[in-house]
Length: 263
Image 1 (cartoon, rainbow, N blue to C red):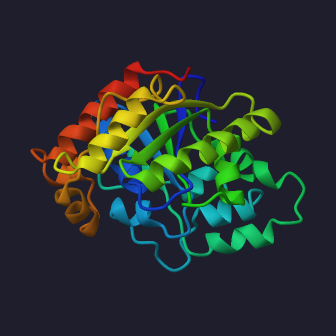
Image 2: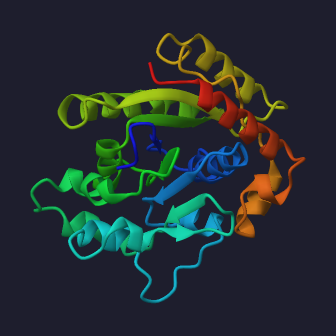
């Protein structure tokens, strides 16, 4: 399961559209640029992280679905794909994963399937980053059962801010019932638009709310169209346009993360 030094981090928010997948692929790329070895695990049936790292899942290619559903026959090493950037690897996802929810419903220990499946991941990674579905599902619970840390991207918008409370409750209950080692490393403000009053207002709330202020990363991810452009061509923004805001912000986040530990 990686070595003790491997940091296993879920990037999670039950609300969609907050910059979760974008954070996974660009933080992974920025960490790689910093000389770290990184494995991205795509646990979202929409497989945007897989596409965002330029990987096309071909017919018959094993994915995270096969690993979770048949961990006897399929090993993590069979599913790990090297992306075109050395030291940045991926366990791809597929729409089949949506069916895993239903298929696992009566399986004993179903919340630990991912953890068991990833026990055989080689210890060579400094970071394992997990993308999660934008809902609290059995897949998300599996990610939380395996991870050691959680990073919460929060769009600087009222809906996203208000949804944090529920997410924090969910993480607390998983910690109590399934994974006592789970901790929130930080909240990262995303899609910040300095031109809008609402972005500034939510930023202020994050900085002053007693639940979040000590968890807030100093790095803020600004709204940046280059990030969307880079996703469209299956490249993290770091490798797509080094001089963009997106690139600068995720590089800053990667550096801050290396210094920041949960709690």
